[in-house]
Image (cartoon, rainbow over all chains, first blue to last red):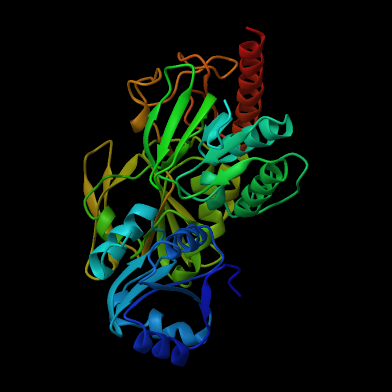
Length: 117
Length: 312
């Protein structure tokens, strides 16, 4: 169970549905650990600003999270969390381990565009 | 000054020093704002277990940070995480801080508690394999290395304690340390040496990391002979101390050659109304408890300073 204020992804099928229905999606797949919580916090902050992006988390230990754990872009990852970005249903970017606010914003801006004022 | 963005004290940094200062100041009914660029708790959140914080037998570092934040906010402090500092002015009587969300905050006093960050080796391959075999957090990533052979770099308390902790997962842990002796306390050295899964490579450092999609090995350099040896490993955990987050303060407050803020016994800096606390300060020992002590002193000194302003 992830105790965050983000919307949670519970299954691979749900994630497939989300990315098919939304152009820009960011998912942080992790645990309630010290490298993961800061990323959830960043996402909660950015969710208010990047209204053209849908933000979710997914529990790393959920067997259904293999859709992220075994994705081509996360191959070789050995650090939590796995943070992935989907554009038009395709995973276009993935990062491993903790990410700062500027790092996440840079990816959101480059992959999905900057938020409109 | 009647302004919703004006505070008695602004605290910059959300580790134990900053949070403690926020607790003391807000409990003294001083209007207090704490800004931090990360998650409240600072480096403490990376510690899986704190067993030497007086009064608490054992606690996860993240939980301790969360409780400190809750205490501070319960007394009225405003705590803003993930806040980028764009500009600041600390020299005048009224201090100001502009943040990335377009806000400008002012105050009569400032407490600098920027803390530190994990020191990196800065050798080839480190950036490439971060999260792909290189980690700075045993709690977070230890189980990726279940049944594998790993390396721990460092010789302080964190390195040896985490090396022992990682033997829960790894079949073999090789500690690589640059000196021929450890800086850790004797209990940590004894525990590591007694663990059959741990071996030691002394007077050596990591010269580079190599691999393809993920880390496959390291080149270990013997610092006495200069000899370099390739060493296959699945993972490397680096615990070689911290560097102070003070780059942005150079030329603003007095900083020593190691980048540490020079503060007095009352945590005052060279600027009136500006105090510094925690791991970024020049000092010998860096512990949660010492940061908490610094934060307490800085808060009380800042409160005294504010009272002296009112008396004028």
